Image (tube, rainbow, N blue to C red; front, top):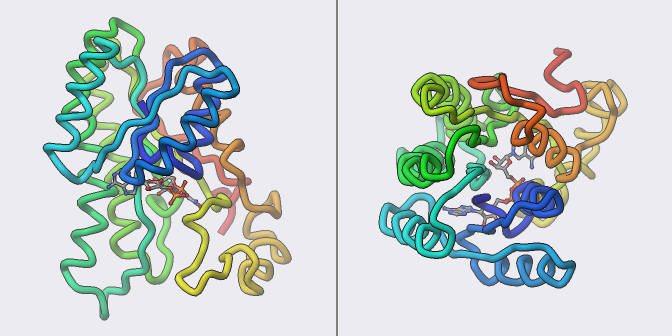
Length: 250
Ligand SMILES: NC(=O)c1ccc[n+]([C@@H]2O[C@H](COP(=O)([O-])OP(=O)(O)OC[C@H]3O[C@@H](n4cnc5c(N)ncnc54)[C@H](O)[C@@H]3O)[C@@H](O)[C@H]2O)c1
């Protein structure tokens, strides 16, 4: 189960897990887009289907769990990836602006996990929950109060959840992407954040991303597969940054 899988990083993760043999559900609020993405992957011979979900809504998440139970009887891997980007400054945002981001990016992952744990337990030992955090959950950046707060919460939710679920042999980890080229990087005016002079100046010219390029969904999908694979059987409660070295510098 990959939430927010209609596009971007979620679609990259879903594609890789399906290529490795998983039967993957692309769950997204943008259900037309998710349907189209799933149809494209099915054409490539992958076992993929799409399902509508709003991770911020109890009824919608419960309906998704009932559907998974009826069609698959279990869930082996849950990837909490769905989120929205939002500029929020402490002096100008409203509580509504703030709570909208928290409801989707933070509570959404917690709601999905609470609802899916029984299905994950039904899948037997060695199962995985992977939370997509962000390097913004580790560092500050202007105009990101709500997003950074939610991502910081996802990092420590991962650790606390890992402690609760380890006795059930369910491993819980988080991955913190850096700057990844997805539709989330497109600005309200239609421009691409990574084409801007300031991005090129700070991150490329001055090496704030030591690898001097933004990431692509495929760069995230590989480490996600590793964390879900048999090669990561003794890892839980951990955060893996996949950011071209961005969090290694200052
Ligand atoms: N792109 C980056 O640079 C970057 C960096 C760090 C972390 N991330 C994280 O990676 C994840 C994926 O981001 P992305 O860049 O692919 O974003 P994206 O905007 O391209 O994709 C997000 C997907 O989530 C879906 N979604 C939004 N609200 C939803 C809801 N309420 N219920 C269900 N689905 C919902 C959207 O429809 C969309 O398909 C997010 O958690 C994001 O915070 C992204």
